[in-house]
Image 1 (tube, rainbow, N blue to C red):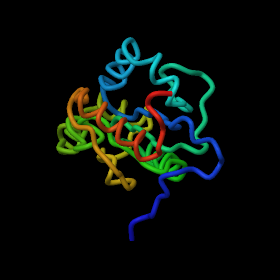
Image 2: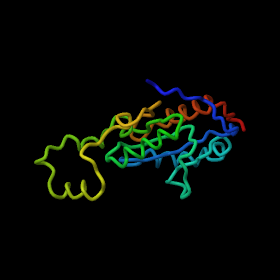
Image 3: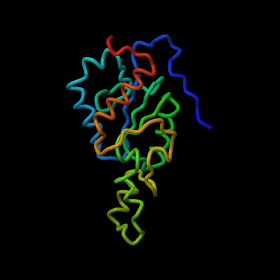
Image 4: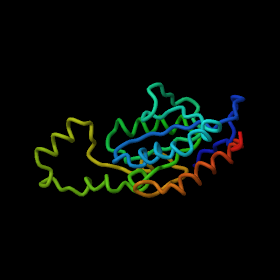
Length: 175
């Protein structure tokens, strides 16, 4: 059964869209591209978007009351799966960003290894960096509402998706 999400918050603060940006197992090319977009859009976005969680830019982050969570990367461990579930619980909408989140690839290539191919060097990484036995795309772990595909993400698709949620939450883009 799909979870019904209300488009408007009830906390009385409707002037900005509350977003989080998260990154799991990937090359983080979409995060780099997103930070590059800030060169062109930061002044406009600050008026209509509250960046409540974005570790690439801030040290003080919060999951509380997210309208939209943008999630990049595949899920490669139980701890990442648990974090993804916490994000889902705190966000009205979740958008998978980039190829690894949307399709799992190329991160899920590791799932194709047969045990003879996993030498001691690879085993060491799997055991020392909290990697689980299998890498999964985001919607194998949590419900995803939208996807922005590409490696890195396609900028026009990302901008269209962001504008879609600004419109959905009735956030004026001319603030």
